[in-house]
Length: 368
Image 1 (cartoon, one colour):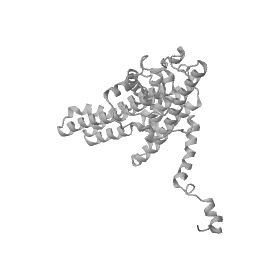
Image 2: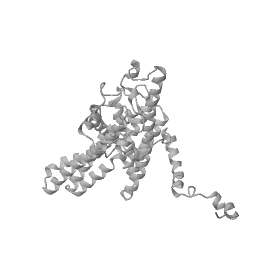
Image 3: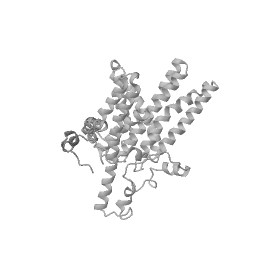
Image 4: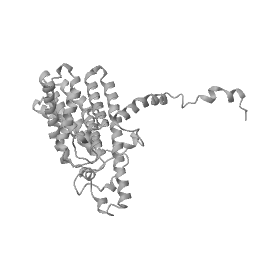
């Protein structure tokens, strides 16, 4: 063996510089920690632990039988909601949302081919509705799968999509007329529409007893999905009237459908989760939401919406990616808190009631 020279052993470069320290990736991570900590402080979330994007979506493209899909969707009743001790608290692995998006996309393509090839203008309403609902509903299914308590029925989601989306639109239009913020142009939508969706969520769910953070996240996502779908359909219809249909209308539908996971559905899901986190076990009321972290999330959502509107289309992709990363970082932080909430309740049941199995005591086996 050749002896190491003294100069090599004592070299400052050899002692102090390592490939890890000089890695651009590590430097970028250090830079990103600052905005991440600010977001955690404002929204009351924590650093993500055990989060692995590849692992979470590892089940997404596995083939499923029709029976598996039906069982996956049969939830939310006294018979189908699992007992608290049987709820998994690891990071969920959603998969149905991708199939829903594929199904809606194929239906949209069917309408599109008929509309373009056969000049079937009477199919324009179907084309608009299918394109408008594809992205928001698929994103809602993702939040449905993140709701690991599985205690929310499809009926309630349909109710929130239809009535919640309609109520949010009506309240928003009333807000535009009353507030008279037209001078703010697009910037005013961030305040009015987010408050409109929050008002619709409060109006329709105030008597519901679902107590988990993930429940509130799903309820908010449903209201946001209805709002987003109806708004997209309205935009497409207006473009159709202005331009006589054609590529402009279809491009708008595709763009808003692809960007749906980064917009209204996720924004209102964040607000719903923060609202349920603030209320705890208390009924929904004004005193229950006097919580600075709730208003931190609401303020962040309004800011994201406002920035989305005022930044021009020239920065479209960069804008969507940057704002989407912020929204989903906070959303995943809220999911993490929702999982911890269930884990803490399970631990409490085991310690107080001696619940080793779901049927060990009446308090242990009741669906939540």
